[in-house]
Length: 79
Image (cartoon, rainbow, N blue to C red; front, top):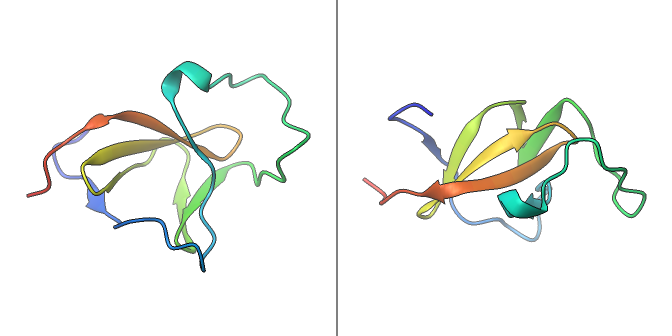
């Protein structure tokens, strides 16, 4: 993870944001018939991010993972 991570703010319920899950819940190979997941990218408040990208939402650090989900990777104090 890089030292500078884009601060994206809180998820806006009016805008498209990919699911956010805990790392312990993430299984790259699991099928998710309940979710209409766009693969290859994650969205946060309507903005698209490539797989592997990190963002910061408040103090929470998220990583875009395969299956188009955000996985919680830890916390960082906002600068």
